[in-house]
Image (cartoon, rainbow, N blue to C red; front, side):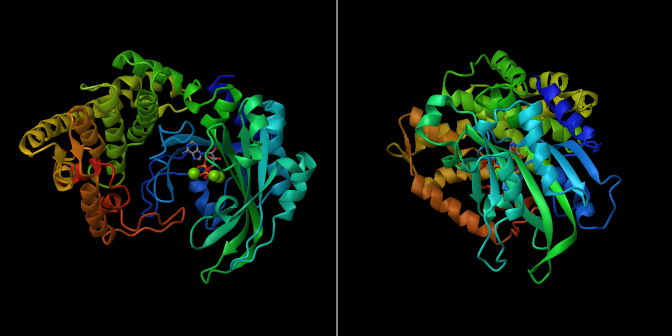
Length: 480
Ligand code: ATP
Ligand code: MG
Ligand code: MG
Ligand code: MG
């Protein structure tokens, strides 16, 4: 089943259950000082859940473009290294605003996965909130448990803690327990060795969470206490690329037709091969992922820049360039060449990719050219450094200067030093980095909720949470 058909079938199914299908909200959020990027399907419905606005329909469904690179949901470091977290991904979702509740949400999710999509039920695990003995003193979600028990045998029900199975919007507002659906796509042989339930929520690439069903039944009041909501809501989110992995029977999101056209193009333009070496594979995954995040963001009107959301986008693109430069030996702009493939493949579902194609290509090409120049200059500086130090050990503060002032990535520094028979005083570098972190931390404030992710949308905010991305500093010192 092609990814396009999977998306369509999801929406059709909920249409048949009387849901109105709505468009994805923009991935880049304008006019909301508390959230820069959409990170979940429910973001665009926040006002409905808060009761400030009435929805046009009590049942909605959609596919939402999401970006998880900051705040509470920051998956950036995982992306490319694992095979199921992306920066930009689609979240399929269905919602009930004071209409149906757990029984329908659970049985429809199950019916769609096992009957429409024909996933073997024996490969699925589900979780229920186990309760908590903290100040909320919540009980086990017996309501959900009872419903699940009628559907799945007990050995495939997991009791989850507050971290995994209780959702809150922020310090205040609607919240509630959730049930997640996880899928085990390992071979029979692997399954015989370790039961799937032991691997749920354990970062196993073939035992992954696909769908989260949130049951909003409480309101967190300003004093921190919970009260039952008069009207209860459903908010679900399913990772589209992960669903494609399951339905297309691949072992990785990157082997689905969401990514294979992009990967083939990367292989072609960089003369590399996917599947032969771990380093190259990671680089190819990073690039195929990041080009989507950047292209969708530019299509939403957010160009790379030195501040705010544009700064985050610039960093993502530079991460991709850096992986290409280091591991695919790409010294010339090439990422912009992937845009045509992306637009061809996803332009039907997201027409903005087609209408903005030329702009996206031009912007990415310019960014690539400019950052590649920076990397080139860094190489010269590093070369001089190696010649000037006595012995073959580079002091930490020198490497830090290269990183901090000139924006030369530290992993690249280490690699080049190693290749030339030099070593790096890593402890010295870490100490300098720590000093800088402490300086910027005092200038940064963040909270952990889905909203109020940044209190100040400005350059300093970004320096605080990801110093290891060397490109962060470049924008501060060089006006590119
Ligand atoms: P995980 O535990 O795998 O990080 P999550 O619990 O953070 O996922 P939710 O916030 O529950 O994810 O989002 C709903 C669904 O969106 C998940 O069940 C998953 O299928 C998908 N999803 C979440 N994060 C990503 C990501 N970075 N890339 C792709 N899909 C994702
Ligand atoms: Mg996560
Ligand atoms: Mg999870
Ligand atoms: Mg989850």
